[in-house]
Structure formats: C-alpha cells, structure tokens
Image (cartoon, rainbow, N blue to C red; front, side, top):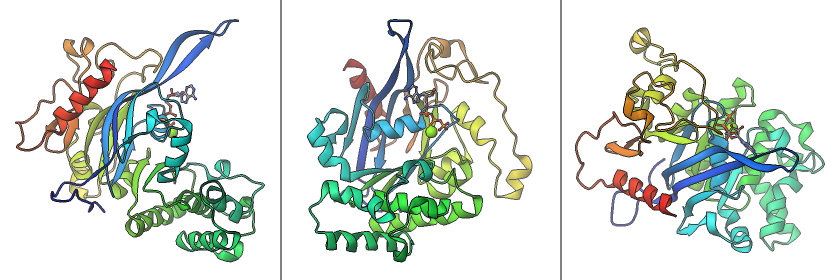
Length: 358
Ligand SMILES: Nc1ncnc2c1ncn2[C@@H]1O[C@H](COP(=O)(O)OP(=O)(O)OP(=O)(O)O)[C@@H](O)[C@H]1O
Ligand SMILES: [Mg+2]
C-alpha cells in the first residue's frame, strides 16, 4: 500500500499536512443567544498523511473523529490551524478556489441511506459531481457512470433505479462510486462500514482496499472498530477529547501502545494469537470523558489516567516523536534517544507552536 516515495529519497511523500487544527462549535444560550462558551470538538491536532497510505483514526464516541475528518475537507469553517493538501492550505481558500480543489478530496459517509438523495436514480447520484465539475457530454457522462459502476461492482442494468431498491452494502457502493467520480486522491472514510451487516462489512473493506491499490488512493479511515482498523490501516492515530494522544505504525501500536489512553483502549481488542490472548489484561478506565466544552486543565486525559502525576494537571503535553515514527503526547513517555535523520517530532512541535502564535 505505502509505496509512493519522494523522488531521490525512500521517504513516502506527504499528501496532507494538518497543523494545529481546531474546530470549536459555539454554545449560545438565553433569549439573546449570547455566545457563552465553545464545544472544543477538535482542539489542536497536528499530523501528516502520506500518499498511498491508510491512516486509521480511532477513539471513543464523541472524541471528535468525524469533526476532524469534516474539518480536514473543509466541510466546516475551521476555528484555527491549517490543512495543506498538495501545497495548498485548504483551511484558507476562498470559495472559488475551494470549489476547484473539491475534486481532489472526497468523503464516504457512515450511513449511505442518509447521504444519498432518495429521489435521484443511481446514475444521477453518481453523475452529479460530473455535472458540477466537468464539461462532459451526456454520452461521455454515461460512459463514465458505467465505468464507475463497474469499478465498485454494481450492475450497469441498475443505473436507473433508486437508492431504496438496494441493500445497505450496495448503497455504500453507490456512495463510493460517487466519491470516485472526479478521480480524487484523498478520501475520508467516516465509519464506512459501521451501518452494514457484519457479513457485508468485509466486502466493502475489500473493495476500498482494491480501489486504493488500483487508483493509488490515500485514506483517512475513521472507525471505532479497532479490529477492522488493525486490518486496513498502515498507521493509526488515537484521539481523546479533541486531541491526538498517539500516532504510530499499526503493528507498533497494537503490540505495544505507549500512551496510557491507547493502552486502555487497545486492551479491549481480542488478540489473534492465543498465547497473547491468554495473558491479555483489560484496563478499565475510571470516570467519564469530560465535556469538550470544559476540558480539564493540563493534559486532557489527566482526570482518568491511571498513571497521572501532579505535572499532568498543569501542563499540556506536546505530541512528540518518542521512537522512530511514533508520536506520543504524554509527559511520562520520554524519547528513547534522538534518532539520526528523524526530525518529525520536532517538526510537529514547531508547527504546533507556530499554530499557537497564529
Ligand atoms: N455541529 C455540531 N455542533 C455542536 N457540537 C457538535 C457538532 N458536531 C459535533 N459536535 C460535538 O463535538 C464532539 C465531537 O463529535 P464527533 O461527532 O466529531 O465525535 P466522533 O468521535 O465522531 O463520535 P462517534 O464515534 O460517536 O461518531 C461531541 O461532543 C459532539 O457533540
Ligand atoms: Mg463520528
């Protein structure tokens, strides 16, 4: 999967660079709808997505995964930070420029039922982005619609049917075909299989993987299904209360999570190896997730962390590279030793500080 490299180096090329991204929703109350606070759904998130990779984004319900995915695609007006895709800061583009970059980045939604217009035929749904962004003739458009239907495994004979005539898995295929219509490079998949029957989930995941190989796609794969993420992702970011607490290559994270929250979250995943499964110990966290309208001072996780220290209540830890390619935001996970040629952590920290100054 991960094979695109910057010319002259063996490092994969960054396709998306997210720096100190913030998405706060205002809370309004009273008769005058006064602005009385903010829900800090995404509160300073910094990470890169490499070309051709699948980056998993996991974390419990309400931690800000969907908001993060939508903010990256600028489906919201972001509160702060930057999202650079192929050298352009999506977060700062004007409406016309944004419209022109839309084809590069697309989204596949959780609930295909809700995201497809019930009054449009499959051909109309898949062809809609072509109407808006291309000047294809009707004949060319139909040829492209058929090609897309073939790519996602939908029978061309169903082009004039309506979404309700299809099963959940087929509807998700329609959503994927529509997302592919304009040859995107980057797709945010927000729980693309969560609404499907278990028997259908693997088919849709296989389809997404095949399409990635054939078309060189890059995915941000949002899911709360940690076993599925283990199957599909190259690297995984763990989110807690609007922040990334750990970002590691998949195997490193599942075999040896470093952040206390990542440890607790992954302790719930059954191990495929029976020897490991026999000794697996579940870490049960105490208390509830604090409200994103009122996150704790210091480290976001300090109210529930089994390893909490006084410093955690005062200082917010940066996400730094503690092992090659492994980023952790915890005062007590120290870098092993500086790694030659690896500046990613410092880079991320500097970018964070720049973001704060902005
Ligand atoms: N449009 C909105 N207006 C106000 N608050 C919002 C809005 N969208 C999300 N939130 C709040 O932001 C926080 C993060 O929500 P989000 O949907 O991003 O979480 P999530 O990680 O995707 O959860 P889930 O796993 O349940 O899908 C939640 O507290 C949610 O209530
Ligand atoms: Mg969500």
